[in-house]
Image 1 (cartoon, helix red, strand yellow):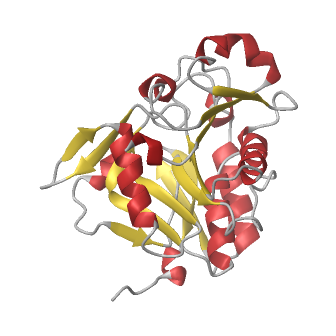
Image 2 (cartoon, one colour; image 1 turned 45 degrees about the vertical axis):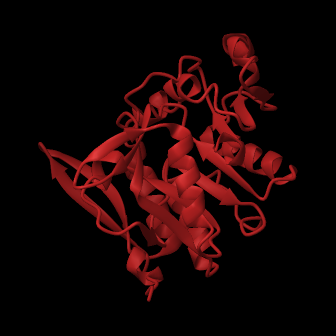
Length: 256
């Protein structure tokens, strides 16, 4: 089974103890860690298990690293490739209203089988907390975060928007869907990861930046318009909390 897993790319910043790195270190497929030059020494211990690829510059943000990864992967021979967050700690499959822990290769392999059912551009797994009660195997044309699989030929004309420090995954999903391409999210196959910004390293400093969630939500709403993105303002213990709610139903596909 392992030999059939698509190549895996993991962008990691100042987090050489990332849980995913340990979890999949022995998985027999091509695996890459994308790091900043300043972190090279910290990741040397992974040379035995991963191909270590250095970015050209430090401190350019996650979506700079994602675009670098995307360009690198598109130059390889494989048609599909995974891009997975370094703080994912486990994978699951839901059955009878309960999540059951499964090996990462099983989760990725079963997801790949679903991705082959339709000419999709981007595939994804579900968040663990939303997966346990799902009745359907997959959903088309919604969000795709944290553990995604690109078809390189169908995504050549999209890139992560460097104007975003957050919300970039939602923006690239909208780019894909606005070009009348498909996204598939496997609802019964899921992953666990910490709350955004909870772990040090990675995007910790960005998530803790004052008003950044507000700024990026407003930016996403302005870019895509009220027809697709509704800016919501909620009161959270006396503090205003901004969020960009995407109308995924605009891209709804009926499956017979």
